[in-house]
Image (tube, rainbow, N blue to C red; front, side, top):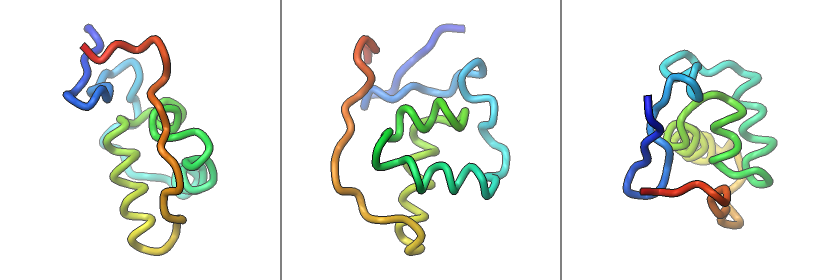
Length: 85
């Protein structure tokens, strides 16, 4: 199965990289997201948590809305060498 990307350059679901997709979020996963999102960014967090970038960004939005995570302070560039075509 080939890796594909959406129009924003985010990797679409791929079973080799997103093994936890459609499984409940564990408290430890949310804690990791909260503690590392600002430093690592959504792309690296998605690989660490085995979820799509879109899912990670959606969870971060929800956590911010619920007041459990700080507002975004900076933008993260995509990992170099990944082609969005």
